[in-house]
Image (cartoon, rainbow, N blue to C red; front, side, top):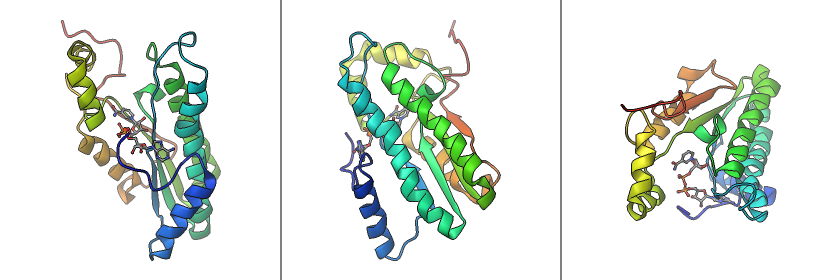
Length: 201
Ligand SMILES: NC(=O)c1ccc[n+]([C@@H]2O[C@H](COP(=O)([O-])OP(=O)(O)OC[C@H]3O[C@@H](n4cnc5c(N)ncnc54)[C@H](O)[C@@H]3O)[C@@H](O)[C@H]2O)c1
């Protein structure tokens, strides 16, 4: 896990508390990015059943509950931008990533419905789908498994993972006025990793 969360996205009370605290400091939540996520690996046979509730709880229900808190506020002000960090796993499957993939596909469906339900109020929802990103957690994994690292680099046509700033730039853009007609979109930032079958030869 990265930084210590200020709210538990699986608990609506905890989210409401965080939003209320933020507002009590004089801020308004105009842009809400649902980024919290967890990952567990395995096939439907070898993965423990609890992984479903854990991963879906954070990655799907957490986004749903975050949307509930965010939209309650957006609707009052007739404005707002909701950005969900899905994944390339939200648009393609990867063997051994079933539950994670299901959770990341689920939130893309939710984003589309949010856009349909609230677009007439000028409130936007979009999904950003990163490919592999060089977070500290990922660096640790790559150092521990150099062979795996080589494989994952080899399937990205750009030959590298994203820098976190390259994902932040996409989030900035979709939530900005420059993207004011972008609603219900799926914005893929994966170095063409999901564009199709790739061979470096
Ligand atoms: N790193 C990648 O390669 C990659 C690729 C595609 C998508 N993503 C997605 O990007 C997002 C960020 O991932 P990351 O790579 O920075 O991983 P990370 O583990 O560094 O960050 C995940 C964050 O989620 C928080 N979190 C977990 N459970 C929570 C909960 N119940 N309530 C509140 N916060 C909680 C953790 O504290 C952590 O700060 C995730 O949704 C992940 O699925 C990451």
